[in-house]
Image (cartoon, rainbow, N blue to C red; front, side, top):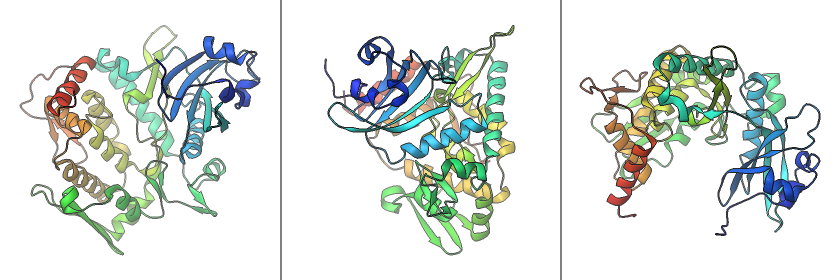
Amino acid sequence: MATNNLNPDDSILSGIPMIKNSITNLETAIKEKCNVISNNFTTCTFSIHLDTPTAGSPENVLVRLESSSEHFTTVAALQKLASVQLPELVPQVLDVGITYTAQGQRLEYSVTEFISDAVTLEQEWDKLDGSQQEDLMSSIITTMSKLQSLALDSEHSREILQETRLYRDGKMALIGGPELGYHSDMAGFLAKLAGDATPAKTNFSVTKTPDSFIVDSELEHVERVELTSSDLAELAKQVVFCHDDLEPRNILIKRDTGNTGKWKIAAIIDWEMAGFFPFAYESGHKDAVLGSSNLHFSYYKLFKEQSQHLLSGGESAIKLLEALRAIDVSKKSCPTKNVGRRFQARWLGREKVELSSDVRLGWVRKVDAGDVGVYTKQDNNDLEMEILKELGYV
């Protein structure tokens, strides 16, 4: 059945020099050498085999198309920066540019190295024993530590990012990225996270003054959080390069070809959420997306345990975590028919977790949780269907 989803065609491939110059017959290539991985009305990701790649280029590449995105170039630049720092783990960005469909629709594209013989960590995580999970998490945390050594104001970063919105008119944004915007100070960044906060709509409000940023929740069990000017200044000093979506679905693994045959990290993909933030923000964001972006509590727990040493900023970092929690908990306490929001609440309940009084730990198992067990992908699909039926959507 015909759809309006975006798909590669002769015109699109002809507009990508690396592909046009490396494939003898584009029409045949689309049928025989092109594999669409995902697509919708505005985006398409596909792999393609090149007949005669240029020297130093791989035979198989991954192409991403987007019909309209003000973030595309910056995301590609951030991935390129990460690739230079972690060449063995971040797919190399080979080309970025503009192409057109046969109907004249303008598309932005990126061409990156394709990682073959790899699967997502999400596919294998629950099959791994505890020691294997710990080893893989240790590799992930080591990778994060290397990323954090990249300073936004370094000559290296400036060279790669100078044409992006992280640099404007010769000025550098202090904090942010494509998904969350670019901000000159921490207060502006926090205001962006809070959004259009009003007690009636979100169950919390924020007050921004020259000397502080305050979060006031309407919920009795959520205390007021005030970040002073000194807190904001301290957090600004702790800004580092973050992926901000290091969940199992964005980590590729493959078997070690040596004698051990153990799984190892093969690549880190999907850099759309990346940017420069205090690590306390990335850690707090993990709490907010457990049960949505990540459906593996054991992965979350190991991440929290092994990344504690990266949480810098002292009391100011703890205040940031408290502010993020206050915003998230208050917002999610509002009645909603959003399927994702309801799924997350139901999932967290099924996992028998609660927010720790130590904000650095995030979600922890309840004392009387007992043996929770492991839920499958089908279990999660069934839970979502249950919610859809309750809401009358199916």
